Length: 560
Image 1 (cartoon, rainbow, N blue to C red):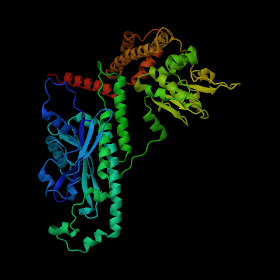
Image 2 (image 1 turned 30 degrees about the vertical axis):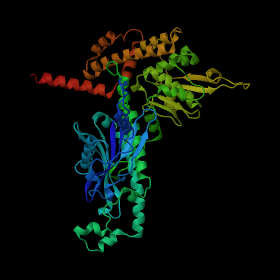
Image 3 (image 1 turned 120 degrees about the horizontal axis):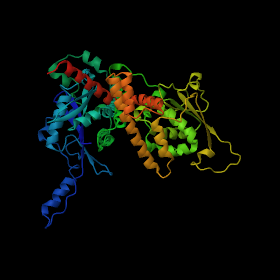
C-alpha cells in the first residue's frame, strides 16, 4: 500500500509532534547496465541507498535539539530504526521517528498538526478523514492515554494514515478502523494498568488539591516531569518494535486486500452485487466492534452471522471440503438422475426454498456450491448448515442436520423442495472412493408441488442441453451457463425498467415478454423466473434507473 502510518502526540510543552512513523519502500525497477567503465562513486552511492533504512536520521537538527523533550521523542538520534523486508515482494518497511524524505516530513507534519488541533471528531476521540490533492489524504484516529502526571490525567495521541489515493483510503476505512482500534485499545489497556498502580502508590488528585496552584510552575509541580514518554506511560520495553510490526503488517495487509482488476466492458450485475455485499459486510463488522458513545450494538444471531459470512460460496473453497462432494452441475445430475435433477433445478430457478437434510455438512455445502451457478449472485441467500429450520424469507438454500423436523406449513408448501441424504447400509466393509457418492448415500427428493416441471423455463431447457452433451467439457459448460445467465439478466433489466420503473400496463408487458422470447411453451415458468431474478438486481442499477426517470420527468415538466 502506497501510504505511511504515523503515531502523533500533543505535547504540553511543544504542541503536536510526530513520534513514530512507518513507510513502505518499493524495490527499484531493474535498469539495464550501462556500457563503459564503472564510475568509482557509483558503488558507494548504491551502498548508501541499500543502507538508507539503517541510517535514518531526523530531518531537522533543530527538531532533535533543545526543542524536543522526553514526551516528543521515541527513538534516540543514534538509533538506526527498524526495518522489515517482505520476502515475497521485496518491499521494505522502514520505521523511525520521522520520514526519511523531506517532502514526506512536511506532509506528515501537517497531518499531525491537523489531526491534533482542528480535524477532530465530536468527543475528540475517534476516526476522521481529511486532506486534499496537494498534501495528501489522511485517515486519523485520535485517542487518550492515561497519565497520572498529565493535565486531566490523560494525554492526547493520534494515529494517522497518509496516502495520495483518496478512493483507496476511503474504501479501506472499515479495515483500518477495525485494526487501528485493536492497537489503540492495547496501548490504552497497558497504560491504564500503569496509571492504576501509580495512583495506588501516590494519588495525584489529592496531592494537587492540597498544593498551591500556579500556572507558571504547574509542570515543575509534577516533579519536573511534565512530558513523559509513551514508553514510560505503558512500561512496555519493546513498545516501538511492537508498533513497527503492527504498522508494517497494516500496510501490507491493507495493500493486498484491494487489488486492481481489468474489466472488459461494463461490470456485470454479479460483480456489482458482490461489491455492495462486501461493503455492507465490512460496515457491519466495523459496527460490531463497538458503538461510539457507550452504546453497545446488538450482536448478530448465529444464523445471521453464518448468512452474512456465506452469502456467496467461493469456487475456490470447493477444494477445501473433505470427504465426498459434488464437483459440478454435471456430476450432480449424474448422481441424482436426469428427472430428479430437473425437478431440483426447477425449484432453484423459481426461487423456491431448497432444503438439504443430512449428516454430512461438506456434501451439502458442495451441492450448494454447484447449484448456486444456476442463479445470479443477488438471488443467493444461503445458510449452509443449521441446527434448526430457517424461514424461506431468510434463505433459499438451507442445510439441516438429519434430526431437524420440517414444519408442517413447509412440507405442505409447493414453494419448497426437500432433499434427504440417507446413508446406504453396506454389508461388507470395503474401502469406497469419495467420488462414488451413490455407494455412500441415497437421495430422496420430495415436494408438495404438483406443477409439471418438464415444460419450462426456457433457460432450464437450454441448460440441460449443455449438461447432457458429453462432448462439452465442464469448463465449456460453465461458460455456456454464464452466457445464458447474462442473456436472461438482460431480459430481467428490460422487464424491470418497463414494468416497475415506467409502470406500463399488463397488455404492454405481454408484448415485451413476447419480444424477449419469454412467451410460448413454459411461459408461466419464464415469467416466474424473470420476477424472481428481479430481486437479484444490484441497488446501484435500481437507483440509477430511478434517478434517470426523475431527471427525465423534471426535464419534461420544466422545458428549457
